[in-house]
Amino acid sequence: MFKISPRLSLTVGTLLAALSSTAAYAAAVPPHLYTNKDFYVNGVFQKEVAKDAVAELMASWGQKMTPEMRKQLWVNDFGLGDYQHVGLASITWVNNLQYGYYAMTMYLLPDQQIPEHKHMPITEPPARPAKHESWRVLNGWVYNFSEIGEATPNPPATASSFGPVKSHNVVIQHAGETLSLKKLESYHFLMASKKGAIVDEYGNWQDRRGWFSSNPKVAPTP
Image (cartoon, rainbow, N blue to C red):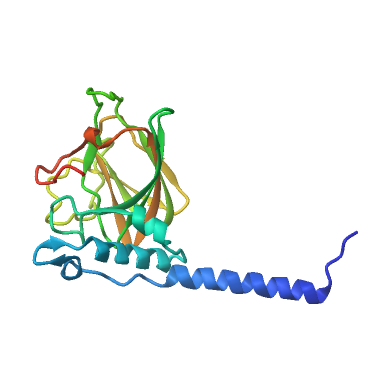
């Protein structure tokens, strides 16, 4: 029988303990809190600053943004001028029209909310059905809002720029948990915890022509 020497066991054990301690420390370090004063200069959204904020969010969970990831990272304030509170940063890893599936990771800053929205069928070529999607929280946690289900008492407040809210059912979704859209063509959105959140999203292929917000002030996603 293969035996591990006590010295090797001690070395491996020490290494694992160190790695565990490092991971725990990384997860415990909150990201620097950026504000709209950082994100806007003379009213113009500073996308590179937003990417800096996402890089720090990732670092707070022990992750590193590579140059290629930074290049792919999509950041949007949806024309509301309030990226601190309402916006989204994401990387789409795959969006395969031929086989009809996609995968994306969303990076939500502390207390940041995605605009309330729904996905409708696309009738113009290439025509596609309404998008169905599921979310898996990788780091942190989120409030998962839906217009389907009973209203949740005392829901977390949304930002003043957020607009009207149709999604009154709220579920706290923790790291490692997966939830799915409750009904096709229903309004929904996510709101991050005070430490932010990193969330994977999976669904059938669609493009942004099928994306509609309940807030008339939200600009169409480019």
